[in-house]
Length: 296
Image (cartoon, rainbow, N blue to C red; front, side, top):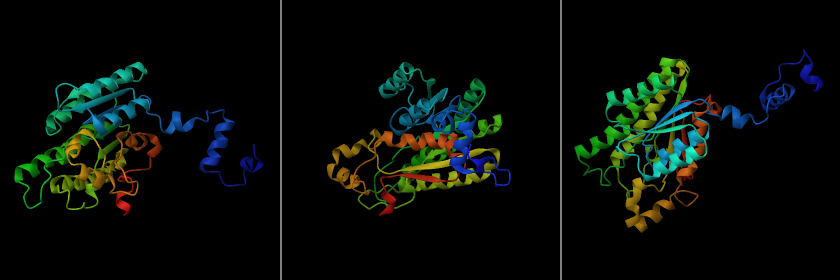
């Protein structure tokens, strides 16, 4: 031991170096980040919109981080080929429970019931990622109809609220805190060029940012953290229409300093971080994963 560490006249040593020394002295494993702060061992999670795409990638990341149960909530009755392949992989790798639930996030009562059922079954509820969303119609703000706007609000804003409520109610019920992660978008913070018009989508994603800030301030004293992730332009089946618009695809691929679309696996790290104790002092915060789109 270094003499200054044992000198009672010196202030208590703090910071990562001091923690590392204390761990060595107590024979604690130095693999702390992997098995400590970032571990989701014994945690229970719900991910909406996780039949495919970003939601499915996030669900797998939680499972690989050690969650004992990951529940994937989506609208279709059956999970689909992508989800089944991921579950097969999770099973082969000896990961925790990976379960699909068919449900409509637009139905508040039913979504709350999903949360309650999970909580009662598992005896805890630790992580929620609200990823369900739709793009809506790509058209001028002067032409979008009431029905088109409302459909987007129902899924992207109300559905996110209902999912966060379903999880937050259980987190408060068990008194163990938790992490709620809402998937927003770069389009909630910056306007895009008029070659891509979707005022309903952009408005709802901006609303998700404020929803998270408000919930974070209310639920922080109860140990529940609420944050958002704002992806930039990612190629998923949700925007597969770009396959027929190569000029538009090339334009958006070059709309950030990295000069390309994001890949869904590039959201895994931030999902696992926000879900884990590694981000224990982070709430009411938006994390850009955008290739630097907002830095132009």
